[in-house]
Amino acid sequence: MIFKAKWVSEITIPTSFFFWKIIFFCVALYFMIYKFIHSLIYFAIFSPYGIKAALYRKRFANNFKVDPRSGRIVDDAESMEETVTSIYNNIKEIARNNVRKFENEPDHGLLGKSIVRICNRLENWVFRYFLLGFILVNILLRLVFIIIGTIALILVPLSLVLAPLYTVLCLFMCLFCYDFTVPNRH
Image (tube, rainbow, N blue to C red; front, side, top):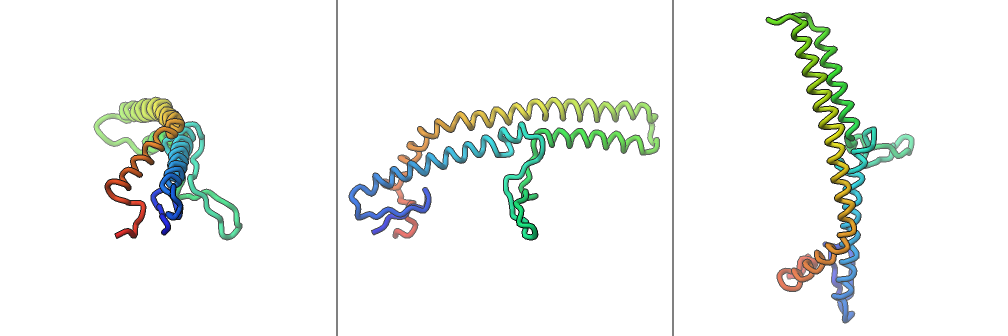
């Protein structure tokens, strides 16, 4: 008889061997530690909330594809992630475009254009550009991303403790409640 486990990875362990559950536990433990470490490092560095998004200046792609005409590896346009700097530049460009658009419109309304111009500049440069763009996005969002990435990197050594506990819990669940590792068992 062959024991297959799809919840860890595609592994096959012969059950004719006497200590097959111990070997299965060791293999499952290895794959759980690998999965925890890989997912935490990927989240800490390359996720949209990670260190790369906080420090990188341009948008970056998580996936790549091969250009069929040239054979070059190019960024996948659908997987482009915004960084803090690109969000800040977008807010700055929106504020500039709003001021430019306001200056090109004719005067209409109850208040004169000079009073509305002061309100427009106050909205665009103080609230939008300075408070939203500089303070919230450029400083606070960058700090939050760096803190999230650092916490995820701190959890990497803890995965050496968490993965065995998770593996033992899964094995006890398989032994005492329901064996979800073998899908075709009746």
